[in-house]
Length: 249
Image 1 (cartoon, rainbow, N blue to C red):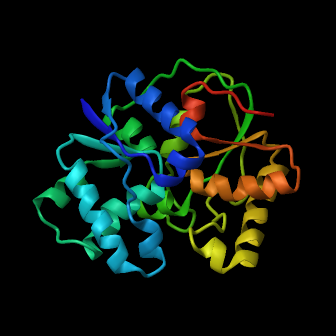
Image 2: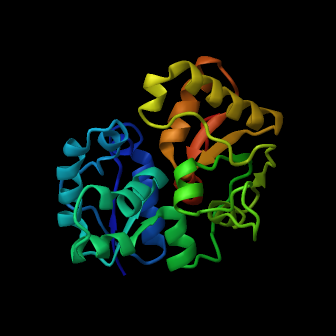
């Protein structure tokens, strides 16, 4: 299975171990992983700000670089959603893009739906709270939303349940937004921080030691609030837990 690992800009620049953990995890399941050439942004920051013309060449470049791969895997729900759900607003839906749209997966979705992981040889003896990002939950359907009736499921949680010695905390508002929202955190700083503190409080009341998510952008936002307030909670991308990393507590 030939897999291209798409590493988002902020992970490449600020959290490179998330990329390494994702690579190690995919290779542990027999994937032949490539990181194609120089990094390319998916264009989400520009599109979110309304700079459509600036986002278009990035979308075209992404399709050009990744169209030949069997699968494209990304450790970010928001970047994945940008590619599969919003590129149609930027570029023509030609054969190359339709192939990209079909073959691009968020990491947890790829592990559960394509590889169909049923066993993990890893231990993580900590109490963990799972934050579900809005893009992953509502645009990629990585889990069931509380406002929608139907079968309950969660792809990230199903993977965490395979980890030995882990204790998954039950949150009171398990699918509430953290307030990051990309450029929203800059333009609406006060509201963004208030929402982030609400999410952190929910994890606090559940006795969480480690907060995890499939989006490092959400964790980056909340980790900043946690560190400034000196709260005893670590943040880790789910790839790091599944790859056997330990928290810095």
